[in-house]
Amino acid sequence: MVDVKILLVGDDALEALNIKKTLESFGYSVPYVVEIGEDAISKAHELMPDLILMDLSLKGNINGIEVAQAIKKLHIPFIYLTADYDDVTVQKTLLTEPYGYLSKPYDSLELKYAIEIAISKNKIENKFKDSKNYYKAIFEHTGTATVIIGEDTIISLANPEFEKLSGYSREEIEGKKSWTEFVDKEDLQTMKEYHQLRRADPGSAPLVYDFRFIDMEGVVKNIHLDIGMIPGTKKSVASLLDITELKKSQEAIAISEEKFRSALDNMMEGCQIISPDWRYLYVNDAVTTHGRFSKEELLGRTMMEMYPGIEDTELFAVLQRCMEERTSHHLDNKFVYPDGTVGWFELSIHPVSEGIFILSIDITERVKRQEEIQFKNDLLEEKIKNQLKKLD
Image (cartoon, rainbow, N blue to C red; front, side, top):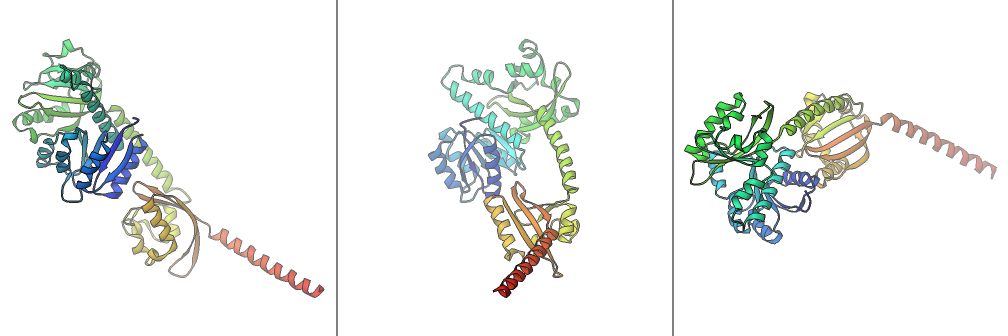
């Protein structure tokens, strides 16, 4: 999506940087990252972004909910990104009318879909806000399958996208079909409980969750549901996003990651991933050979624990630059083992979402040969000089 400007608000600088990179990879513009609540308010007024992606926990004296309340008059859509998703939090956030919630750890594709839905909804609202048919227009033209559900579970209204999703026409759905007819039996009982809880106490049932949807042909689809009560009524409005392809992609990615990990495990080159707090997250067999420590000894431990004094070396300074500046580096490194022996390694260091990735190639024998050749060349040069002196 082009020309979409997003203000990113969060108290974790490294996490915010990773989210910023993800957003920019999708084509969004992220002109500013804010950590302090008070700064978020001023930047929202200054930048007037198309959307705000905001953590509930912020630095400063105010949290994400208070920021949302302070900028409510700007009518900027925002999505909460949080690890805290309890009933009390939900009740407080509902008052700020967010466009969505994302729980940590987030999935990059879910993040993209949440943003696209929020932007789409906001554009539709802006387009039709002065129309007599404002709410009907939103319902009809949103890009997501949407239905209005009564207390008796009957669907009273369905938009064109729901017709496409279900395979039924409006005439077959509205006032006739219960939402329960579209739910896989394994999910049905839980969703019925949510239906009753939502009407007794709106904050007691989740606002978003996934379930399996069955269309007219009996095809099972994975659906991401966003549902809430219509104020002053016993009716609820539900948006259904088909994430079947996303699920398939996630499964394919999982298989791909397993193959990738297997490939890394069996590489002749050393492969290791180091976290921002300098702990070994992953090492392959070659790294254990290079470093002379087993996987069990390395994983979960810090580089400083395994190699005392490494933080004072030129190598660590390069690793630190890569970790902080998110830049790649290449170098040949002389490594002295605790027993005094020396190894030479060609290192390629790259920033990754988990921290940094180090690819190492043992070039000790190559360096030794180069040193032997240099030594012989020096002897030959000295011999030639001596012979020239005799001729003189």
